[in-house]
Amino acid sequence: MKYKTLPLLFLTLGLFLLFPVAAGTQSGNPIALVEAFLCEDIQDNVPQNRTTVFSIERRTAVCYTAFDPVPQQAVIYHQWFHRDKPSARIRLTLKPPRWSTYSSIQLRAEDIGPWRVEITDAQGNIFHILRFSVTE
Amino acid sequence: MDNFLILILSLRWQDIIDIGLVSYILLRFYVLFRGTNAFRVLIGMTILWFFQQVAVSLGLVVTSWVVQGVVALGAFIIIVIFRNEIRNVLLARNLKSILWDFSSKTVITAIETIVQSVHEMAQQKCGALLVFPGKEDLEEVVQGGIPWKGAISKEMILSIFWPDNPVHDGAAIIQGDQIDQVTVILPVSRSDNLPSYYGTRHRAALGLAEATDALVILVSEERGDVVVAKDSQLRIVKQKRRLEQILQEHMGVAIKKGRESRKEKLAFIAAAMFSVVFTTGVWFSVSRGVDTLVTLQVPLEYTKRDLAMEIVKTSINTVNLELEGSGALIKSIRPDQVQVRLDLSKSKAGPNTFTISRKNISLPPGVVLKGVTPSVVDVELDVLIKKELPVQIDWVGRLPDHFILEQASVEPKTVEIIGAQRMLEKMKTIYTEKIPLDNLEVEGVITANVALNPASLKIAPGSEERVTIKYLTRLRNQ
Image: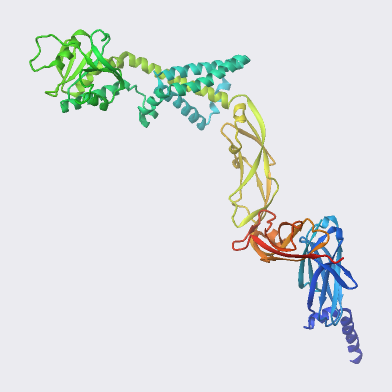
């Protein structure tokens, strides 16, 4: 009996270590998005020039997000859409107790037009949608 | 002969009505305008037109130009110069007689009017003298007279002999359907055989009847008798019908009913035959001339669509129709005469396939359909739904380099859109029209329309078509 339950215990522990976010979000103590905006750059972990319009000459668009609390390590996604067409899905890891993170995309001439970034959890639940335009 | 038979057998009932109607219109023109100067000029113009056609077919360029010019000018001249004559013809008849009546009633109508006028004057004991010349000239016999040249009407005759009218004295001379002269002094009879109660008016009437072959109608002022003087005799006429007969005999209407009536009938039959032959000739030359084949690109029209559905996609929007017909018909085809319609009443949501057949195509008469390409059309329909979509600003252009657009918000944040289900299900955002960045202030408010793309989308009732944009710019941190 003792030898039969031991492998099951190890298996359960292993699963917790492998999928901490899933475990955290299912626990009923969710992570919370406190800040989300677009900016031109991040320098020394500080967002620079918060904006909603990017010129392609700037070459980069950055989506900055801050979460508090982050009860345990979790995964979120920044999903970038050009018009309604998916362009990039960036996986970001959050760590307790609070965490700020960002993603960015490189802008090209064909990217001119309206964009949106959906900030979602691992299950696809949307925290927030940011909208912006890429212009000449 | 066989070709002629084939030609005749190919006639549709519409073609026969077509020829019949135009022939009848031509015949009506003849009936209404025969005997008028306008009609004679019209005949001349027709001959000229025919001559011009011959000149064109022979290649006589200058001649055909000149004749064409004369014909064009002639048509204008007819309307201008003969406008009174044309107006008289049309005004003198009621609608029924314009459309249907074939008899020549000018003289008969005048006689009826005269008889009625005389009868009325007799009842009112209004003295009158009416002279109807025969073949002899009255110029040498009568005196005075004021030219009147008025069309006969009861009112006109009554007013001339009204006692207070300055021209009521003397006689009125009537020529055809016209009062030619009034206040004419007639020669007085010197006969001793007249009753004592006959006055000067009776003697004047008899005097003219003795001197000429004219017929004089007299209305006695004292007794209200109607007396006819003809061939040196005075006769009291009591019945209107008898007076009418006397007038008809004098004016030759009765004789006309014999020989001239037959001649008139023959002329009428000839005119009717000419109208039919001429119209048939023109009809065949127009509709069965040298065949021409032409390909027309015609837009497809979709009809009877269920209003709850929308056309999402069609494989084609135009079809090429190969049409055959006479050159004149093909050249005269107007775009609205050729239509291709597809009935969508039985179509369902999703892809539908239709085959274009003759019943989908409407063509002008005489034009034959030889082919349709492509003959198959795929039409995709979808159910219309409503969906609430977030509005996003579609910025274009660029801000000055040292500025950034820090904030921009839009109100209302969402609008409700109506469109095809498959399309709307894929749409996550609706955009504004393009908003230029170049002219933005530091901060401000702009109103803009929602861009409905594709155009089949509609704003749902109750939802805003225009949105308000608030923005804030600031200097960029370097």
